[in-house]
Length: 69
Image (cartoon, rainbow, N blue to C red; front, side, top):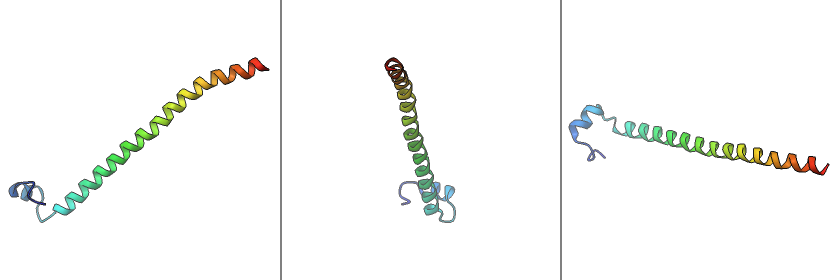
């Protein structure tokens, strides 16, 4: 686990054996960021398609009933 970074760098960044806490906190932060990005992308796509389809459907559905009646 500590082989990825040199020991002086780890000793400077993570004094007192905080490697596991740092890794867990970083992983949790990245996971939360990824979830926020995925949620915003998924939520924005249906809104954009819903904005497009009611506008296009509203023109056609309003034209047909008014023309039929």
